[in-house]
Image (cartoon, rainbow, N blue to C red):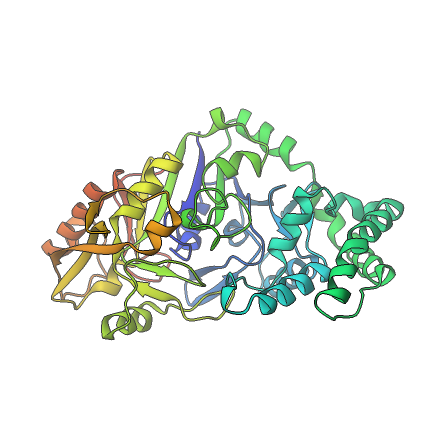
Length: 427
């Protein structure tokens, strides 16, 4: 049985939650391997809608073990609040496993995140202000706090004091803010220890054994390919590796164990936050995509920037992730357009470019080159097979598949859990 990676092939918000939930009934483990509560998944189950920020989508499947891997940064208050909210709605969360090696987001991380963004002004990155970047920075600087540190007060105190020695200097001297008292932080973190203890595990060992035993393990990315710290539109990116390689480092499962890598593509393109976006629309079409698609960030609450499908980005995602399949979401949103533009290349300094430029400057100046595909007006939300789709909708899917470089194995035709056409099984 396979180990699969499921990730966003654009800038995130492509509908990974729906895809993960669709597979949940057949999957034994669902693993978040990077990011924090700056991510968000909306999952619709029957008439119930669940907004997940830190928890893997598999938490909604009773037979699935949800895992928060070592590559995730965890705000304990957010995690416990999210678990409590699901418990109140009758969802059993007792199977959750939390890596003891995952790093914690502390109150001083969120403080640093917010004051830094304000200080940057017009040069801000557009972070969610939830402390994710500073937590990852501490991890790399080897002054981070891990989940396992909650169970040794002496080590926890030493690490918090070491982290605050430098940060308090910055807060006081650069941002004119009060210093943060280390004792208060230690006390707050220790208060979470016993609440989290039932979930803490050596998840690398658990997952390694699960793969060896033939269990189906699904690795779930928290953001999209173009937000990857190495392969995204730097510096307007997240602070972790959202691409397929991050699934290995963020879980402790080796790359030879991965069988398939599935990219989630929205039938158009959206982005939250700052940074270049070649196909972004500022007209009635952009407003229509935002309205019909319900394009508001699950975590941020911000309206998403909307644009037409970008095949250059899709090809790039195929290459850097080694994608074996695509899951195309929100095809129904495009119903009603007489013709649908698709970006097939960029124009940069008067030259046609068909691959994503490595230069940040070139990408900032990229202008989309469009081809126009015939649209459709028929309602597709009841379609159960590919042949049920209108001919022009079929043509649109086939064109995107050819341009993107990997087969489209599933299509989302509505927001509901069952409103999906499965062309080829992922398992």
